[in-house]
Length: 287
Image (cartoon, rainbow, N blue to C red):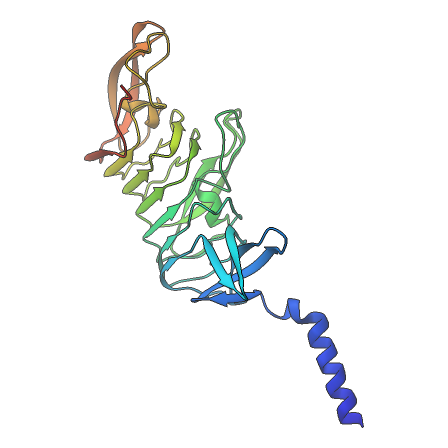
């Protein structure tokens, strides 16, 4: 009788606390998920209650099928990839609209990643406060991370913090739409290749300031956004605009002319001396 009672109690406890025993709700093809909405059928990527849940190359799907239901993958949990020391590459789909702080903390073998945006989510040009590239790696020190000072509010010169970005990370692709804000990749001295997809609609001045090791850059347009040949009154900024007007180690001083308010204007920009290749994702000028 006592054995049956103990068995009943154990079963009851498992039913009561089962959700908290595991860090995930289900797993499909080696990726762990938490259900964030049973109504809207959305899930977040998480871990296996383990600091080393993933390794090698990970491609996150935009949707996942589980128990006769299709869930959309819309977010990545805090420290979902915590301590994945053998993780080399991650591809995050454009269905993801939110990435938590430190989601990729302590991934010292990272070489490349593809993201739908920079920071925690999509931003508009009117947004003044935002999270830079380092946000998803977190502020905690780890071996193999480069301490990188970055700004998160373009209205303040003191709104900055230090993130630890993997020193091994060399290539980043931003494939979602939206606006690439000022200092988005500020001081990312280890990156050698950045690809900005054609769905990005605008890039602020100095978005790539301090990227002193950059060798290759792919852009959807030159300057701040796509311009037409018929525009006469707007500012049509040159290539150096996205690197900004501040001097930094490893940069070359370049004087460039551009159309501004119906006349020709000159500005000095600082472009990485290491830059060798510039590609375009779409036509430079919309006819």
